[in-house]
Image (cartoon, rainbow, N blue to C red; front, side, top):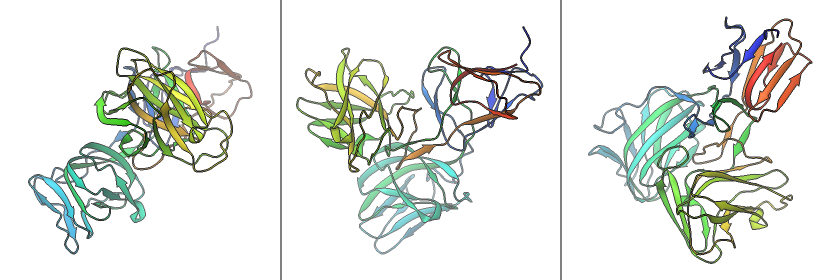
Length: 395
């Protein structure tokens, strides 16, 4: 058997690079690009975000003193740093806290923060071009990503606000990290996907979803498929119950997906729906986390339509399940989970390419399901096809 001119079996990588095993001098290593975040299923079976982060940028991020921050109050606003927290406090007038740390306008940053107390209003973060985005303002720890302006600024959204923040930490997001995915086997595949957008805002915060019927939601109830304690308990009684978002979806190719598990030892039943409930699909919920998906069967024709989860007639007695990681995409299948924070989010396409070695007459791509794609029209620069790629052999 002739030795391959190039062999890629996904194992080693770094930012912007995927290593081939042949040739072993580095000339066959692939260049990788995806200028956005992305998730994978890691070796432990957990959903993991695949981007890296720089060092924490804010000074006095835990408010141990009043240094480094500028608190701007207008009128009767009385925001202050005291007792180890930032207190955003106003009856109606504008108030904000800022810190000039030289963020790069337009670049993406991650913000981790914890709210100790929230009795009125919401807070917003000021991003690129002065755009203001409402961020989760309930008690607990939160993470968001946003496109920054040069000065970091958090403010009251509008009206009366009374919120205490324990800390705020800011990190620059660094992209172009390849994804080795273990979702289909004990061996990793190189996960390469086209661009897609999660149209659900706040994809793992169900507290602001619309409800119809008798529902109880308990945030941060149980460990989610990411290994974090951030899944939501969903309970409802008999009768028709809906948990939903209003999202315009007109035309073909929409897919609704959730991770769901039963909170009891028994199977339970729900329906995923879109098109305002005109299209539904039954799902059997087991005591293990699973991802459930539903794509439209006919073309939705009206713009103001709801999507979500609804009661199944197969369910006997009350429902008690946990849910996590909602996703709604304008395509006919579910792609890897795309986290969203205070708005929709787009995962850009993965591009993995290499200069084809001289003399190659055939390229065989093998995918995680053992299907293959053979290429005999050889390009000067070869780009791997989308999918879960198990190996690439050039001869």
